[in-house]
Length: 226
Image (tube, rainbow, N blue to C red; front, side, top):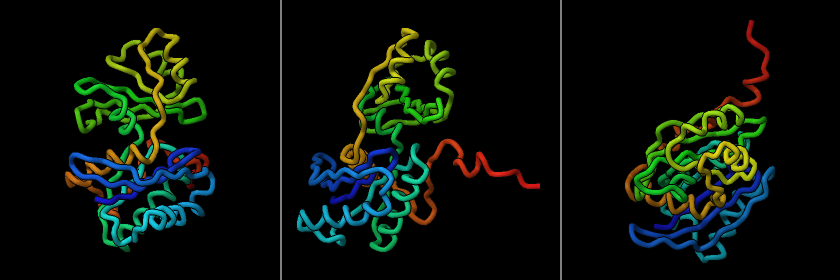
């Protein structure tokens, strides 16, 4: 199965052209994307990756995209682009939470992983997952003030995983076991998404939406209706 994986959730994004089946997985190309210009870069970079590997867009079997949490604009651009490609090309779509991806990539099977991502404004995105060999079952995802999370971190069972050095430092100060892990890019998103596509864990392009976890600035700061 040939897939295109897209991550536009953060300040730096990426796309990956991957191929695999139930036993094998190969990254044909991984391309970085500069944040703030996703809308201009995404389609040309996908076309470029296919061309450089002598592949046509019709040969792609499915698409995978990070559905959240993260940048409101970045997530919208990534999901809208992939939804459009799936509808035009009649291809399957799988979505992956970045919290889920970190839990799968760095968590220990059979244990609970608590993943923490910097959300800005002194807040963090938190995802609690039961990690299995090939999937992670979400317990809950939410957003909280970093200080509030740190105060409660001593009660967490299992690992706290974060790619953010500042978050790791704050949690470590409470003597809670925290692991600073590598950030996830589109190649790992592709690996997770491929398993979802093969198992039929797909999303409907016409109705799937972004998983923001928190409200957008427009909603937070808009004037109340009279």
